[in-house]
Image 1 (cartoon, rainbow, N blue to C red):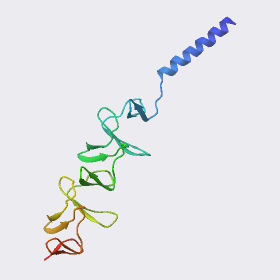
Image 2 (cartoon, rainbow, N blue to C red):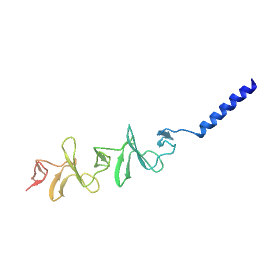
Image 3 (tube, rainbow, N blue to C red):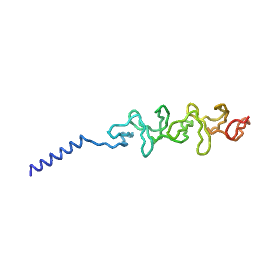
Image 4 (cartoon, rainbow, N blue to C red):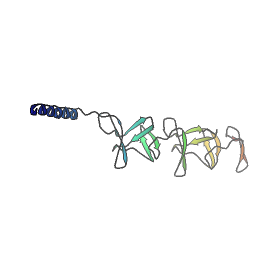
Length: 171
């Protein structure tokens, strides 16, 4: 009986030690000291990369922590991740009283026209900020933009000037 107990104990100890050598990791999120980290299948922490899951697209910084409420400069472009760490996509976002547009991939647009879901047109300058309040010369034509950043259309604007349906100054 003692020999059988010894053999069972030895076999169990051997099985436990073998299983610890061949640890298996599953990729996924883990929280440490209030910060979220993404663990790769080999158990390493992902760093300086985008992680796409069913919940959205996230960025992890060089220390591996999920970026939250911050600008991200990656792949030669600027992005913004919200309070949940999700990349902002297909929307107008106001940050520090400036308007920005993020495309379907999450990249901030610049030197580009964008029309929103309400058919309002915006122009984003070389800094990615919507131009606001006043006249702007864009690609050889003058346009008037409201305080909201939306382009004036088919209207009389301050100074008594007229802009057409396409937003261009009618001379």
